Length: 111
Length: 115
Image (tube, rainbow over all chains, first blue to last red; front, top):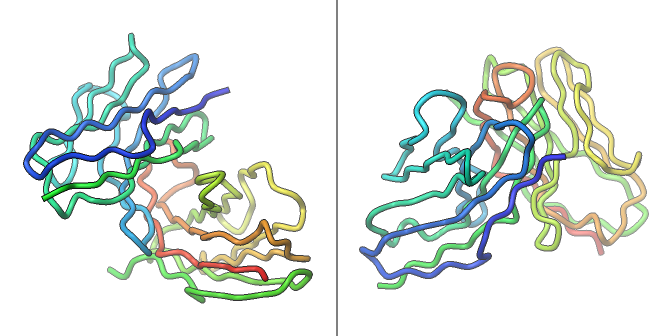
């Protein structure tokens, strides 16, 4: 069975610093991979997704993620954090229409 | 294009009651999925409907049910409410069945509180 693990339920960075949110998946074959963001009292919004092809995926708001098959990882990065990036981030995997979400990582951005 | 709408946004019920939540997908989207979000369990998949048929189901008791209408609008029903059913219920729509690579668009959710 597939699963997804997000390392670190809380991550705090200073404004302008690098953002790195970690996601590892377990699956016998590479699944489709997604990162979603959730702002308070809102639903989830897709940041980016990996299906096939280029392993470095660029998303909205300056975020990008790299699919590393050998490490079964799909970490989310942003070179310079902005205050508006404070939110909860979810990694998700989909294999054979089975969608699983990670537990989420709450990102705090300090001024 | 209007996004996914969910009604009501907030709901308070007591144990033993039943509740019906509504979701209107983005125009043209035929797939609707429902998720339960709680602090302890995170996001859990409830079920997916496509063309008025349930296509996938998560690991929830039979008290949780749903349906989809011909206009793709969907409802989910929870009977005999328990305190543990308190959660944010999210609806997501996509163009086609399954979320393999089709982007899911989420609504703002319905916050259900069971007293």
